[in-house]
Length: 277
Image 1 (cartoon, helix red, strand yellow):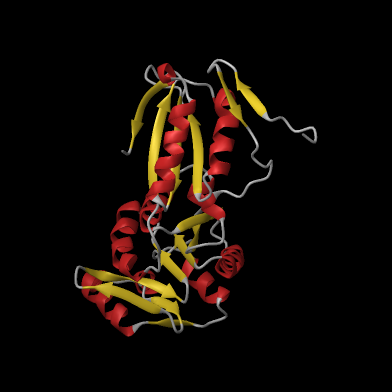
Image 2 (cartoon, one colour):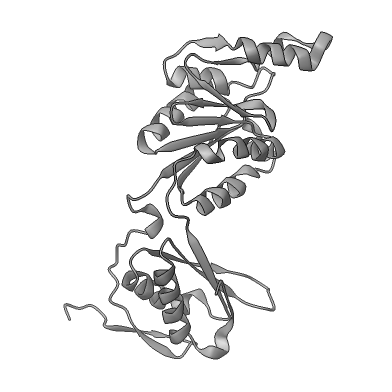
């Protein structure tokens, strides 16, 4: 047996499960298939806790539904040099990069100049966007407002009839505002422009097991069903369940097979419910 254990006892769940999974595995989320994305969250207010970040969970859910793997999330300060360096690194390693924050009219809104710096391009003022800003603010228009008409040379303004304010795209980088409501509206402008594959499917098993008791089982099933990703999430002081197990993947048959294998191995009295059938 080369010293390897052929089985692991699930203490408390009273099951013996074969555990031949390799000690080093690559999650189905991070195998080099499909479109991979990164998200750069920009803002001192996030790093200091002054503002609760809300765009990460929204973007993660939306990309998951589109079949795009959100492989990395980075948070950085309002520092043009740092932002530019992060954009260069992320865009080189991912198919798509999204940024949020730092696109307003104030002195600390430095994302647009930083994007231009990342691409070694000049800043230009878009005349159509400038006119739209002047019409919107009228006599109250300031130079700060007009800064929002600036963009890296060669960038594209993506817009539609449903929303007059466009989204800036520079090659594979999409530049979005940090305000959650506006972020979500602008995401709809770009949804159809995103290259994606088969959407991910997700199912869940709610249990009263302990994570340590089922760790070997989860590793074994994920290893046997290549292409699925299994996660476990403990819940403290919840009268209904203690651990939620999720099974995600692009192939419905594999996802269902993994769920069935887990349900078969888990003690029936420890299963609260199975979702996603």
